[in-house]
Amino acid sequence: MIEFKDVLKIYPNGTKGLNNVNIKINKGEFVVIVGLSGAGKSTMLRSINRLHEITSGEIIIDGKSITKARGKALLRCRRDIGMIFQNFNLVKRSTVLRNVLSGRVGYHSTIRTLLGLFPKEDINIALNALKRVNLEEKAYSRADELSGGQQQRVSIARALAQEAKFILADEPVASLDPLTTKQVMDDLKRINKDLGITTIVNLHFVDLARQYATRIVGVRAGEIVFDGPVEEATDDVFSSIYGRPVKQDEMLGAKV
Amino acid sequence: MDALKKRRLSLMKRLVTLIFIIVILWASSLGTEVSISSLMDGLPGMGSLFLEMLPPDWSYFSYVTEPMLETIRMAVIGTTYGAIVAIPFALLSSRNVVKWPVIYFPFRFVMNLIRTIPELLLAALFVPVLGIGDNAGIMALSVFSFGVIAKLAYESIEAIDNGPLEAMTAVGANKIQWIFYGVVPQVIASFVSYTLYCFEINVRAAAILGYVGAGGIGLYLNNTLKLFQYQRVSTIIIYTLIVVVIIDMISNKCREKLI
Image (cartoon, rainbow over all chains, first blue to last red; front, side, top):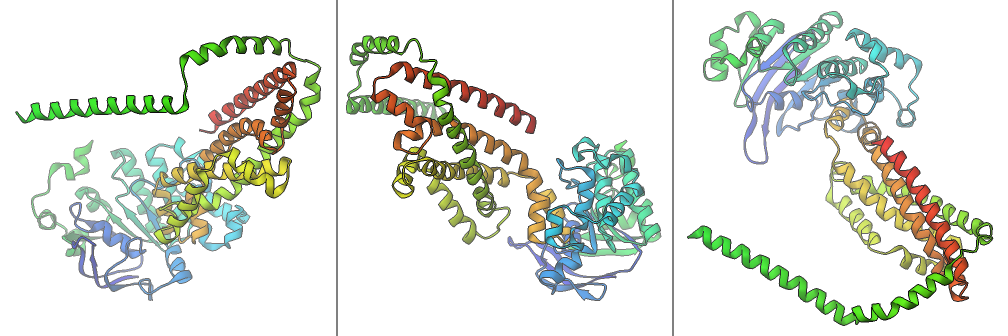
């Protein structure tokens, strides 16, 4: 469970990234955060694993405060949280397998990981993770030989190899075409269902959000303006989140 | 009206720059007393020297092979030492690896300071300390290589993609793992390429280090010149040329493959 308690984030220039956010995300949920760009979706997601530091308040993950965690405890917290980025964030020159194995470094001693001496078990975990996203045969290719959609699925495999309890996906399909968008979203959904990994995704496509989410959180100007099951997220609700009627280009259908 | 003024101003700027450059050139040539006529006067002398160099003393080739190998060995060891010391310095000078200016500014300062010293001067400094011979040359080349490689490496570290670094933070990697999985794979190819490039420079530099007593083929060049053995001088020059060209060729091929 992830819990935000009175979370406030003020950027150095004075803008409020998050304004008094209180929310609980339960195990196994597939939450989609929607909102205009700049509304605070990314800030909210990144404050969970402290890629962004919050100004005040507290974020609790499975009963432990990540906000107060220091040193090794913080690394342990982060190890439990997989993250998917808009630009995949793979090391392009490294092999796919090495990229996936990089998700395992939190489980081993520094010296062992520096020498690349991962136990056989870990190689199997990594290969299984690749199998789950149907990229097992690409294990020994260089990451930059893969298409964008494939690279994104490699980054999902990295989160799986990490044996994360949570997956945060920050605009995972924003740089993909509609067909690969579907594959990536399907992979995320399947992993969420099969392994029960709590998944939080930032999206700006309204129809995608409706199709995949179990729960929708609407963010505007750093505040949560809607929080409810997908059935309740009607067109009117989206309009109120966006502060205006939903435009055609906010539907993936329009992108085809 | 305003546009015309701006145009005049930029014309003025160009004119001032041109005058400035001419004055500098004129002052420099005055100071060094260089003149076309003295160059002309020297021409016949150059011609006769060139004739004295011919034919090269081919039998001398085998004699200078050992010092030539020594020169290459100096370059290999010097480059390697320099490259090894450059790694931590390059990392600690990079703003995206070390977030605190308190650390990266001093490291950059030391790096830039060392880089300003020419290798011949370094050799001249090391000869009195380590004595005449290749040790002084190796030390000079190590320090020189360190300066070159550390500078180039730190610049390429600062230019890497931030994405993988963010990803490594997110998986819970500690700082050392973060460097080895996020930074190193992104810069290793350019690092090796810079090291090879530095090796090319070092082979050339090592060939003249003997002039200040720091070992290698330069010593022989110096001696034969002093004894007016011009045919041997030309042998050494030809030999050096061949070795440098071959090493440059191999190194260039390797670097092409890396990028």
